[in-house]
Image (cartoon, rainbow, N blue to C red; front, side):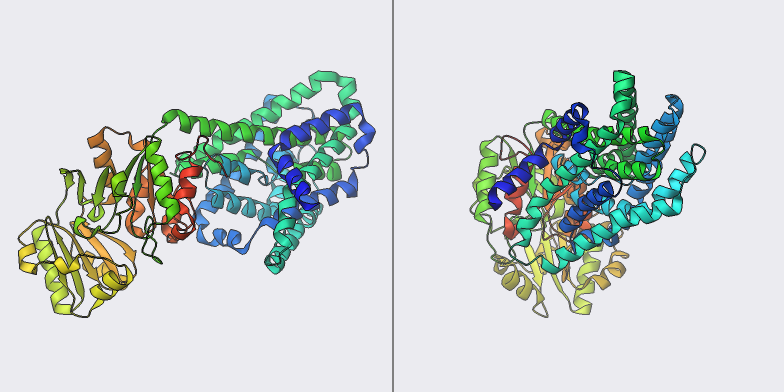
Length: 588
């Protein structure tokens, strides 16, 4: 019995717009069908929708608000500034009658819609950012919506701001809170995931009931005023929604968001919680029954337009290129820290990517001499960005080589000797190791399973070569003081006990650009995978930057997309998501 219900829920979620439109059309011809959806009943139904939202939220979703405060602040400001202002402008441009004006203003003053999270996922947006924005705008709604309505609609009708505050609190915050509590308390129960899987269908049915109730309420006006009223109102809703998308994307560009964040803030700003607007219109503007019409049309159109926009974003991605250059960090990205092996799923995914015509590159902090753990995929690799971009090569041809100034290399060696910490010195041909406390052996040989360090040469032999990278073994708190004495160097840390130092002209991002330029590749057609601090430049540079699920928080914030961990098929899942190893992108 449960399986058919789950299938129905998935179908309703996938065809929400079609279902809602069908209910609206049926109700137009049979208005008695949803005449019961009014007043308190309508409020309860909206509460059910918000409860379904709460049941899908976890504590990690709310941590986003703390971990990414600036992103959420920018998103919230855009949400509650752009849409009310656009609605206010359209009221005057279209010379709307008071009832319709109240409706579109109410839509503009409401928080973001729940389905925006799904649209963000479909168009390769930043889903975590989307969830965070939805949470923030919903939590702010009891204060912001009445306040904004007072400012924008106070001259049209008297606004019961206190009543509206209490109503929003009851129909949004409390149900969401109950849902979150149930999720937190019962998430580990066997039956709970099954219950969650039914929530999308319940939400769609509930929203359709609200739309049906609205059509039933305004049926007589629609009949008496005909198609003109509907088209005029739809034109206003269309302009409001479309300008929201455009201005939301513009806000992301002004904030210098990456592509995924720009898409997300566009969708979050443009798609409003029109279900909440519908209930508020029916409750507080009952004397103006047509006020619910823009809200009802928005319920259906926002879902349709969100799907269309996500599809346009994907079509844009597919038109840019069908082939990518893929850049992979090694440790923690291709190779598991736990098993010291490349997962079978990663090998299979890279094999398929090559068969599909994509190019595969390594982008690592390791120097060539200790890249010894790629045996199972070496035949797939087209080129190497090594030592954090200081040495890049394809076959025997050196694409880029950036050395540390000799004086600063000597300074770092002297500092290591005087203070007694470990140091790996990477020259053009050889490697030297200073390991007075055994840290290099403990971390590199035992923890990271690095081979070939036994082939290290004496320090003075290596110091006669150009030095490409130096890796001192000390905690992060010593790093700032040391780097202040190395003005022509940059540091990249991907392990708490050591840091990779290269010349300031070298980092993985510059290595990706050098490789793309040499091979005649468009940098926008690159995808980079990483997990550590030394991958940040590469993630920023690539057309699509992907952070592993086991990556640090800073890298995840920089990335366009966060996949699962290396041990949880992270590479395979991301390549499939972006269509590299499947015919259609964004497959779940």
